[in-house]
Image 1: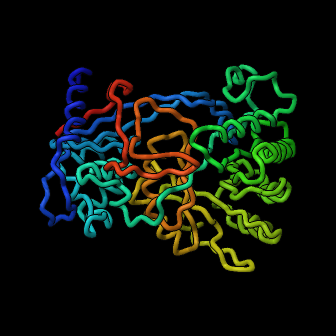
Image 2: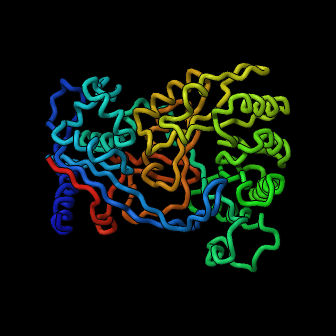
Image 3: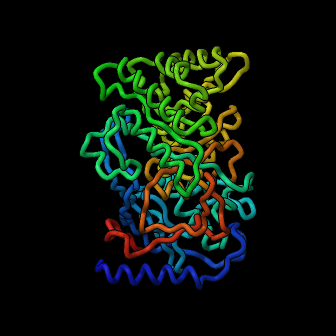
Amino acid sequence: MHRRVFLARSCAATAGLLTQPLLTQAGPRAKRAELRITRIVVQEARGRRLTPVAPNAYAAYRGYDVREPVLRIQTAQGVEGFCHGRGTPEQLKRLLGLDPFTLFEWDGKRVRGPAGQHQALLTDLTGADIALFDLLGRALKRPVADLLGRRVRRQVSIYDSSLYMEDLLKPAEREGLVYWNGPPATNPVEWVARKAEWVLRQPWGVRTLKIKSGRAKWMNSFDEAFARDIAVFNAVRAAVGKSVTLLVDGNDGYKPRPSAAADFALAVNAPGPYALEEMFPDVFIAETHALKHRLREAKLKTKLADGEDNLGGIRTSSRVEQFRGAKVEPLFDIDQGDMNQAGYLRLRESARDGAARGMTMAPHNFGSKLGFYAMIHLGLVTPNWEFCESDDTQIPALQAPGIDVRHGTATLTGQPGVGWRLREEFLEKPSLVLEA
């Protein structure tokens, strides 16, 4: 399709959001105007981080650039919903011609779950249900949170996950860093500490930071990497003070020596990590029991987190495990299914299952503003919620006037749907267009 034709149609759809009839009831028997999905578009939104992605346990330097695929689901009535792109063309095509209200079962004005005849479709689409909820929220003029459940809090906490292995940056990769304007550091851990200080000065006001660990792939020996992990944590702790909460993400970097995860937690300066995330694979059940035993024996309350690599969070065989110490508790404390991959319905069910087991939820979200804004709604209605993951990613095509971020928390301003909008001039040409 010619770009000008596409933009004209998209602008018409956007204008329709301002003139659409008010739909006040959502149930299948409610009196409401019918919606019909007639167009599905995928476009890329390019962005840039304020700081580059340094190495982590498995990936090398990834630089500043960010690319988010945007899935847009539009109706004949001019109502649109969008999210981070999910689903194959074959799966998405099955949405054409459907009324999005009929895809779900309703409990009054809230979505109970997928409608029976559409359960397979919604399961296949995974995170694309975020766009459908956005669409329905706009149609009903209600925030997505109020479609998902009853709000249990007014705001959700945010943590910053942009601290990587800045100590491993090469000289050319350190040029132009916004958090460094002096001569090169004599001690490489200072690169991470200075970035931590910079993050705390940013206007979003977070007080919880996540540090990457597990440098074995990049250093001469595991022992050398282990010592650097400890040194980095201690340097950051000294830089930010004792009141800032620190998380540690190993990205399975402790797989060669799982017992060292406990050694790390016991060796770092207090206060130690609030949580250890993915220090080694979650299928290492015996090793995880040993890790938790040593933590609790040392009177550390450090939580264990995992689940980003599995659709919907920690796999069933791992989430059913209990640790029996001074008290019975789940072996894994925090479930971290990926927000964009899993979507609302799947993560809502994971949270409910986790709550029954004493687990909390903090979805994984790497470099995605779409995932960050979407998870805020789920966090407002999930009793066992921990916090939302964000970083310094900037996406010019995306604005979110429906979300207010300050003092390390996010609240809703009352706008419908997720509370975001797209700026057409910053979107790339469509990579997929499906029409009824």
